[in-house]
Amino acid sequence: MTPTELAGALAVVTFAGVLRGITGFGGAMMITPLLSILAGPVPAVVIALILETSAALVMFADAIPKAHWKVLAYLAIPTIFTVPLGGYLLLTLDPVLARKVIAVVVIVCSTALLFGIRYSGRPRATTSLLLGSIVGAMLGATSVGAPPVILYLLSGPDPAAVTRANLSIFVTAISVIGLVMLAIAGAITVKLALTAALLVVPFLLSTWLGGKLFTRLNDAIARHIALGLMMTAGIISLLS
Image (cartoon, rainbow, N blue to C red):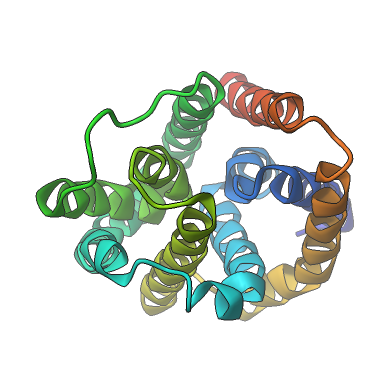
């Protein structure tokens, strides 16, 4: 990245961190479409996955005793096989087309979350396996994998603390799988890894700030504003 691109990436990551702190998710939904304009889809996905993993790991220890591991297993195991498929698409698609795909996924996911669309049934093993397979491909291709799982888990009987723990562990697991796949494919260069490392601290600090702001804001209004901004980022990327 040039100094100008790095400055732009820092601004995007900081803003995305605040939104992630407010909503509890969605960092990649803001980072990937905007960074794909600055640096291309592959670097954007790599950086978003590294930053999302770092943020999820902060909550990982607290999430372990609260998580519903059976549900997580059904969701996470299929992603091992489908993340490489998504990664293959990311690495082989025309960069402009890949950026448009990322933008469309972000727009659809943010719209679904914004309007409270949820899975209407109860979580089942077969449904979890199918969703995990789809989400794995989405994550490998776009870095955006959590929103469909959020909509799915919200339909279940688990309390909010368990759902949040499930999401923290799931996001960590699939992000690590995605990063391993991209590393094996040679997509993670030393320069790109160093760029991501430089952005980790501002992302974590801004996520912490967003969490503090969340306690002072109306829950529904804050989430709607954040999701609206994520949708806007997707539209900007789609039209650029």
